[in-house]
Image 1 (cartoon, rainbow, N blue to C red):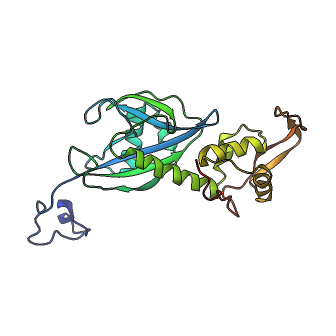
Image 2 (image 1 turned 135 degrees about the vertical axis):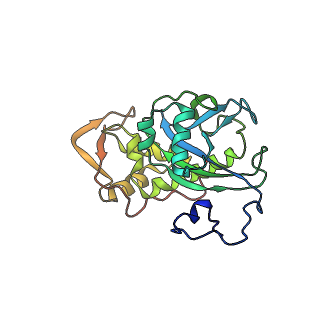
Image 3 (image 1 turned 180 degrees about the vertical axis):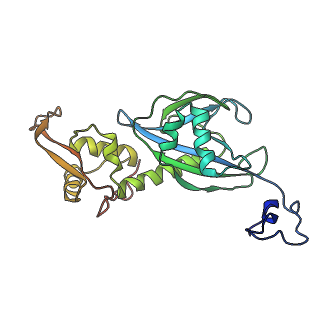
Length: 256
């Protein structure tokens, strides 16, 4: 049901408030945003977390986020809160591709009042070190799964977000963003294994990558020793494709 506000009376562009409508007939509730932002560092999946500076859950790890202001969209609120609570530069945050994950609306998810949260997620390379600000006492990249209890229902949000970014690697070329400009297929495989939480079959992975048009391009005459006893591994760079056709699907039932 769409409820028209007082501004709807001005000019009638959005229609008028129905006669006899009582805006106090429904219990008020707040809307927040939460952000599950991931990166890969030294072969480990990390999540961007903050230490809460206020009750409830003061001192606990939580996702960056906060309340949506009265004249603000959730998209704008997500970028504002991310910049305020992590200290990341405004221009950097403005350029991030944040994907709306889902809405979390359990009546008891927040002890203060009824709060509905719109969650966003992103998998990003090369963000600088964050620092706390706003309601956050501290901000940090934390290895996924190493943080113990999270405030509110943020553990559920973070798990859902990991599943979403895992799917993103199936259909896009995002994984090459976490490799050096010239990389081996083993280094690319490590990115997939890190995000998916599974070990992939090397020959099968190599075959699928090389059979996907525009995914990677071999660097002519370049190779790198990888520490094994075999011959040096060929080097590749990211190709021109942005989407994978066919997709590079995760093995079923092997996530750790």
